[in-house]
Length: 158
Ligand code: ADP
Ligand code: MG
Image (cartoon, rainbow, N blue to C red; front, side, top):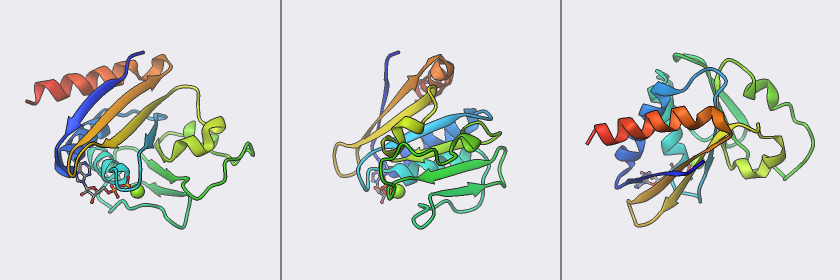
């Protein structure tokens, strides 16, 4: 499956794409977010939460691996596994991946072995000060439709 690429020129533009994704996600969806520090992973997650109708402020779960937000259309499980050792140990993530909410995993490659086989991999690259390239890659068939809808929305909004 091909990767979809979107370019943004401000954090607001990144937020807007994430909001649209937040409006489209369904129960049990799993999204991964990769990108260097300051790329915009948390900015993206905040937008996603907004699109899901979550009003609580979403911030990086620095001292916990997972934060759960339940005041939106669907629960959001926000994981930041930055501080985790790469491990094969089963840490029980499946409970969330298979739950009724939407899971977002920052630094997902650190728990590669434990990720579901079907997921939407999102990568953010800082191309200039305020410019970002964001790629959306569906892993497995499940997220192809979601991806297409997102891109369709994107081109219609110009
Ligand atoms: P991460 O969680 O990946 O470490 P953050 O979302 O916390 O990154 O920080 C990204 C920073 O980059 C924010 O200060 C944000 O305002 C800024 N920024 C500038 N341009 C963009 C853009 N196009 N998309 C996302 N963030 C941007
Ligand atoms: Mg962050």
